[in-house]
Image (cartoon, rainbow over all chains, first blue to last red; front, side, top):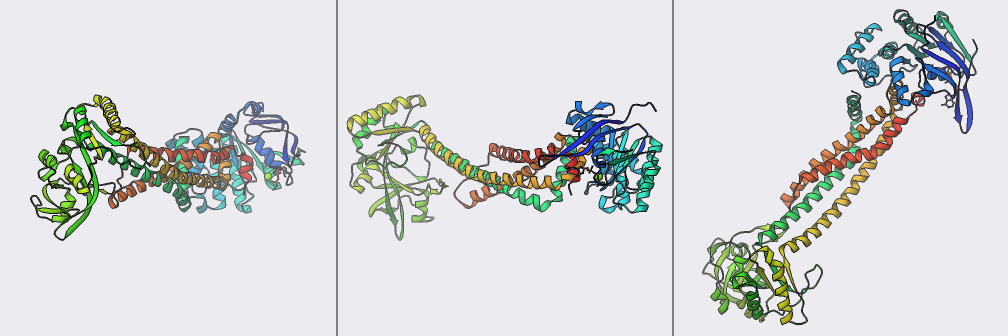
Length: 226
Length: 394
Ligand SMILES: Nc1ncnc2c1ncn2[C@@H]1O[C@H](COP(=O)(O)OP(=O)(O)OP(=O)(O)O)[C@@H](O)[C@H]1O
Ligand SMILES: [Mg+2]
């Protein structure tokens, strides 16, 4: 594997300021995710898993260390450029889905394309195609409230992939789902990783799930321990 | 495309909270409506006054003793008929001038009586002021020279005293003295609450005898052309001051009257509009407030939009459009309401109302500006939200 990394963190730290006191959430983490990787992030609560995901996805900037997304050092990017980079190269999936409530499945999926400047007709076509791929071709007009939890998370996965990103970051995507539905969603992520080669990083507490990933990133107290 | 999305989202957000949006708009609706109504009334009053002053005739110079200004007690006039003759010579002939002596008196015919304004005049009045007769003739030169007791009635007075009968040739009393009706003026109607048909003209000499005075209250001169007005004004006041040492005389042109009235009405309109503008300001604060609530409510949505690639500017514009939409919809509603109210006022009261394009443009522009001014802080706050924090918000 000598391909350029999708994202690369070198000795990255992230501190939060709490009432004038610096609280370290990450204390020097180095992680490289290559195209096609399927990595699981494990660790106890508060160990910095979400913080790492936000950094890898360019939602946040490190306090120190070097972070390169799609080969670009985030230090050298403006907020606008970083937004564009997120739009094109990163897909996020959240524990609580984060779908727009009054918006149909197809329009939820098409949302990133709005900010990519894609025309309405093309947006719709690509959103429908993605919904079809996650098995929701028959639920295009449904709103989040009219969908089951598993269906909602599949809409969110379709949204994460609609711009054709190279990296999909899923922070406890099954946390709000029962185990059977959760297994389905994870199966879908694996399948997408296999078929389209998108790199997947998934935060999970489930050891079986982690075992199925090609790599495990174990965290403790803001450090990668294995 | 991003812009279209911003519009769609803003409209959707307003629709999602119909009642709240409506109540928030109310402040703007009332503010704009109030501004539109008050400006319409002010403009209408101004136009009415202007058309009346211009309707008097052209190139007029009004000469009165004392200073012409608001709040000054009128000076008792020292002018007499000899002054009239002197000024007539300066003005270029008796045809160019008229003199008046006015008083409020009761007029009576049979059982009908009315308190009205009685005006002593020269026979030249209808040529100096544009004034048309409906029936009969006006006061004649010989009527004035001999002080004959003849009267020309305003339309309203004729109606009140004689009903549908033709009053020409009939007898009437003015302050208990018998007069003969020789003519009736054409109907003028109401303006600004004043009945312009409520007057009686009699020869100034007859009026002087009636009131037991030799006084002439005021002179009106019709100049041959506008360029002569200034010179004439100086000559006439100079001569009158010379003849009556110690008394000041003022000569004002229509333009000067229009200028003074226009300024007064303009200030009045401005003050009223400013008061109404305060309610618009209050409406704007309401918009600001509700936009802050909207931003807070949709913090997670903002975080999500940023996560999928929305820039700071995209989010700011979206909320700014929402605020502007809120105020312009309110503005249009207020405009419609204001126009309706202005017409209602015009129909139900003597106060005229005029809707002008600049008032409409102003109302629209101001409401949009209120949206931008009061929406910009909440919108910037939305745009600057840290996506990580926004996404964690419950
Ligand atoms: N905005 C913040 N301000 C201060 N401290 C923060 C902030 N966000 C996170 N932290 C702290 O940083 C540390 C790491 O948080 P993080 O959310 O990354 O943990 P996590 O591994 O995702 O935990 P969990 O499994 O519960 O989701 C925690 O101690 C947390 O309290
Ligand atoms: Mg977490």
